[in-house]
Length: 287
Image (cartoon, rainbow, N blue to C red):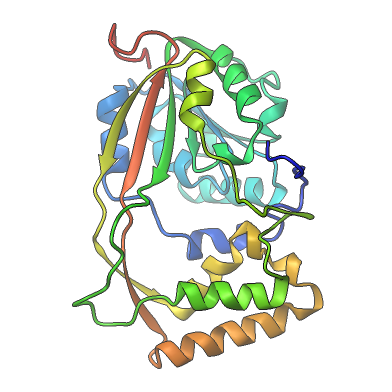
C-alpha cells in the first residue's frame, strides 16, 4: 500500500455509472489473444480481481464455465450484474462485493486470475500471495494494462484531440494540486513494482504479449465528460456542492476546443503479462 494513504470505500464512489460510456476499451483482439495464450476449454473458473463494472470479466465469460468478479464498490458490482443480464451470461457469472485483501472469501480455486489495471490499488504482496494459493496447479495470473508509450497524436483525423492537460488543470482548480483518492490524497500517485512483487510471491514468467492499438477513435463531449467523472481522482462526490459548476466549466472548455462537440483519438494498445503458479515453460496453464 502507499505510505500515508489508506483505502476507503469512497475511492470510486459514484463513478460506476460513467465507466462504460467514458472509459476507452481495451485494444481489439484482446480476447482472441487471451484465448490463444490460455487455451481455455470453456469449463474452467476465472476470477477477475478489482473487476469494476465487469469490463474485462464479461468479455472473457464465454471462455469459462464460471466467472467471478470481485470489487469493493457497490455501484461497480451492480453495474456488472446489470450488464451480465443484458449479455445473457448472468447464469455463468457471479459478482462479489469485497476487497482483494479479503480473499479468498470462500470462493474456492480458479484456473485463471485476472487484474485489469487494478493491482496498483491493493496491498500487492498480500493479494499476490493469496491469489497464488487460490490458483489450481498450472493456473495463471494475467495482468492487463494499457500501453503507456504509444504516440496519441491525431494528425490526419477529423477532430481535435481531447484536451487532457487543460482538463487536469481544471480538476486541480476545483480539488487542489495534490491527487485525490477517496478521503485521502496520493502525492506520488499509485505504486508500481508489480513485477517484483509477483516474483517474490512465487509466480513464474511473465510471458509478455501486446495487442496493438492506434486505431482511430471518435468521442463526443458527453463521453469525454463521463470519462473524467469515472476517474478516482475526480469522482463526482469529491466536488461536493461544486459538482454542477465543475461540469459546466468542463463542458465550456470542451466547446472552446471543438465547436462540433467531437474529438479524435487513438485506441491505446493493451499489454498482457501472463505469470504461472508453476513453471510456465513446462506446460500451458491448465484452464
